[in-house]
Image (tube, rainbow, N blue to C red; front, side, top):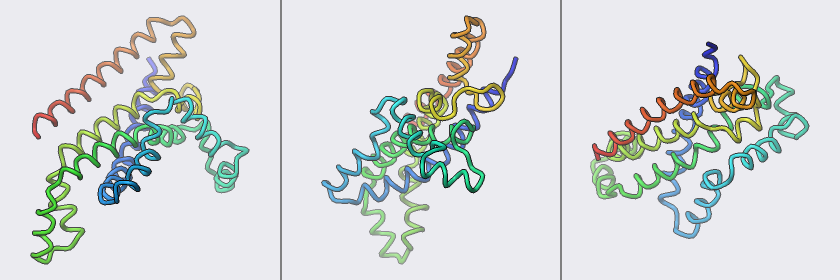
Amino acid sequence: MDWFPLWNSLRIAGIACVIVFFLGICAAYYAARLPRVIKGVLDVILTLPLVLPPTVCGYLLLMLFGVKRPLGILLSQIGVKVVMNWYGGVIAAAVVAFPLMYRTARGAFESFDENLAYAGKTLGLSNAYIFWRIRMPVCRQGILAGTVLAFARALGEYGATSMLIGYTPGRTATISTTVYQLWRTNDEKGALTWVLINLAISAVVLLIVNLLERKK
């Protein structure tokens, strides 16, 4: 059995999760401090990938990174081709997983008691110290839950990924695209095997989220 789809899916989801972890926390931290009107507009923009069909996200990404598009041409000049390469899947997975991390982290930051930050400032602590040593530990359950959910979303991504990187065995194949291809070629046994693997991973992810929620 070729285990490349599992390895590739975990690789794509893992890298995408790291990207959305830092971008999501940064966006959530600053968005939580903005005026309501501005925050509302920013929320709409940053949350759109959550409500758009994945194929629409994939189409928009093709409009950005396609080989005949300005950005795609620019990247190709430095030897980077996003379309039909596994790292293009990282971009697709990060785009669709970002809203989950952002909204979960923003909710955690909004529930943070700012008096703790003010107390730290009166003691002469820097903003960076307060953020990493006070704010983040207090909000850690929500942030960790958002991270796990973002990873699960990235792992199961199909629509945007299939449009941007397609399906090439040993190169761009993921669990989701492999299931579809095996089903399309009437290999129901192979498709069922990958479905069960995906179910097992998803069950573990949900178990982790439940454990994190109980610790709140």
